[in-house]
Image 1 (cartoon, rainbow, N blue to C red):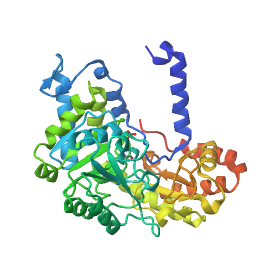
Image 2 (image 1 turned 30 degrees about the vertical axis):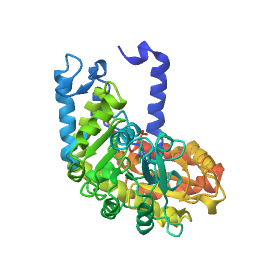
Image 3 (image 1 turned 135 degrees about the vertical axis):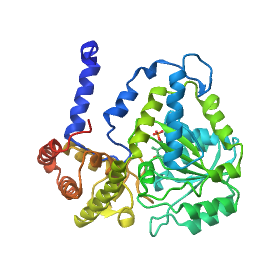
Image 4 (image 1 turned 120 degrees about the vertical axis):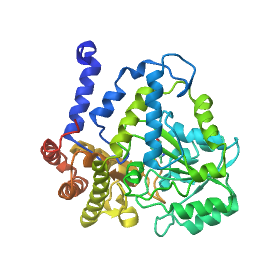
Length: 414
Ligand SMILES: *Cc1c(COP(=O)(O)O)cnc(C)c1O
């Protein structure tokens, strides 16, 4: 029986959301549109069973096929990212990071991560998060002049602080990471280095962003951003990680289960397996390259319209607009763009004079619209629409209609 016949209330709302997605541009850089193959796995009967433990070492019976699915998923992750171990059970990116803390630190140990308003993630030691409440968190920032990571400054700070664990990775940083340099910095004090590639995992597997794997000990990622899978998290251990700590595989697996989680979501793990297969294809490589081409084109077009971009452009899938010269705050810009059919998010910019709930920036990205097949000409159109809406609120309705027309030519993936 169809959902809409069983539960009209929820069925109707899902239909409405589908229409909203079909007729508007999803430009939040952490979002994407999954394939129907991924969603079939996610919506399958695999949601029915408990599978506490790991393949071959479960606490429940009846898991013959679950074991095979999780094994395939782990093997695909190992092959795709070129790592020695993968744990695919974390419920999402934050729980994956939490497991890393649990595995390699004791409460009170010192951790360093990039500050949230400078582009880092909550779980990298931001003050309201568990990572700063239970650990001694010291944050590093981007350079005031360039808004880029200043590796000399980070090195100096690391040598002073001597952290046990260093995070590298971001939610709002539009430039490449120098993993080699970060590896040298971590090694100089014997710290664990964890790369959190949640945003850029799809770019990394496609070779469009350098891989951290040769230079770091641990890699964590979400599976639902540029990787284009269902919501989930993976923790990976590199050869370098295993050389530093031969117990690392055991520590990570024990931290996930039984340390932090009970039964894994195996329907989700099946969806991740499907997404990893998709991510290994040549089509995906082209897709990832187009994400970056689109972001660069959009960035140039926005600069052409008089927008100021943090770091003046992008090397990856995202753009951070500094709205200070436009006399509008991030929240108002986000709201206007939503009315026009462009979904973005307000965001702090480095050294933002305004507080985090009233930031001066706007974060946008190209992963989802590139999945729909949009290319450079559409990026030019989008930049113009963004400019029209931010220059004059009265343009929202006109732009909304134009975007609806454009979307008809770019259906969501089947
Ligand atoms: C999105 C993100 C996460 C967290 O992922 P959730 O699935 O939202 O918990 C962690 N780290 C970085 C860098 C991210 O961008």
